[in-house]
Image (cartoon, rainbow, N blue to C red):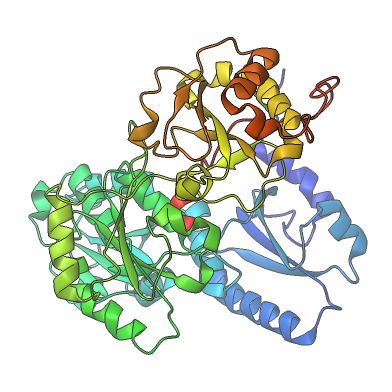
Length: 511
C-alpha cells in the first residue's frame, strides 16, 4: 500500500484550515486557539490575553497562532471537533495534535510547543539568550567552542531523553558566554524556582557522561520542597520514572493558609537540600485530602501539620507509609532525627491499607485494614471474610459470584453478620488471622470472640451457608430464620464488581 507523505496529508488540511498553513510555504508548527466569543467577558478576555502574549513569543520561532471564535465559526469548530472551550490544538505540518501543556497560561503554551515541536537542542546566541532563559521553568544551556566539543555528546543524550520536560540549548558564541559570566566549556541550568536560580555544573565538564548529566538534571528538576498536587503530579511522575521509583518521598501535610505554614516549610528547606540525593521533599494541602484516604497516609486522622515518608517503589513489595508521631512537635530537629532513623531502617511502617470506600453499595462489605477493628472486632456480629490477591486473581474472580450470592443470602441479617472481602495485597492482614496459603482464603470470626476459624470446604454456595449456620446457630438465625433470603435466583442476573484496586502510579500519594 502506498504511504501518504506528510506534505500530502498537510495539503488536505489546507482545505479545512487555510489560515493555519500558507499554500506557498508549509508551516512546520501552528497553533489554533478555539474560544467562545459569547462566554463571560472576564474569562474570554483573560484567555485571549494569554494567547496574544504567546503569539508574540512564538512568532520569533516561526510558530503561527490563529484565534477561532466558535460563536461565529460554527462549521469550522464542528469540523475540527474541539473539546470544551477554550481549547488549543497544535498542527504539526498541518496534522492536528492534542495540546498537553500544563495550562493555558502563555508561559506554559510557549514552553510546551518549544519543547515538543522545535529542535531538540536550540541554538542560542546573544540575540535570543535572554528569551531562552525565560522561556521555561527549567532550561539547560551548554557553552562550547565547537558543536562537537565536550559536553555536547552528553547534552544530546540528555536532550533526547528529557526534551519533553526540559528545554535544552547550546551556544558556541563567546559573547553569549561572557554575558552569562561563565567559562567555556560549561553547562548551566536556569530555573524559575528555588535558589540559586542559575546553577553551573560543578564537576569536570570534559569527563561528564550522559548518565551523570541526566542524574544531575533530574535532581534539579523538582523544587526542594514543591507542592504535590493535581497540577504538579506529572512532574513528579516524570521524576520518579527517571530514578526508577527508588527514592522515597517525604511529605509535609498542612494548611497553607495558616500563618505557621510558610515558616515551617522554610525551616525544613535545609534538610531537603541535605537529603536531596536520598529522598524527595514535598508538601500537600491538607484541605485537598479526601477524608476517606487519610488511612492511606498511615494516620488515623491528619493533624495540622503532619509529616510522612512514603516508599514509592511498589514492586516486589507494596508502597509503605512511615508517619511521624503526631504527638511530637514537628520541627527541623525532630524531622532530621526521624529521617536519619528511617534511612537506617529504624522506622516501622504503618499498617498497609486501601482508602476507606466512600460507599458500600453491595451486600458484600469491601473491607480495608483501616476499618479492621471497627468491622471485624465488633463483638455484636459474626464476620465471614474472603481474602483475595493478585497472584491468584483468576481463582478469586471465578469465586466472586458465589461469594456475592452468600452476601445476598444473609442480606436481611446485616445487624448480626457481615459478609466481607479484603484485598490481601493492598491491606495488611493482622497476624491473628493466621497464614493465607492461597486465594481465595475464607475465615469466619464468631461474635464476641477473637477466634478466627478457617473454612476448608468446597467453594459452593450450599456448603458456605451450611458452614455459617453451623458456627452461628440459633443466635444468628433467630426466630425461624427471619431475614434469611431464599437462594433461588440469587446471583443469576446480578452484575458482580470486578476485583481490583487503585493501580495508578501515585494512587496513595494523591489520595
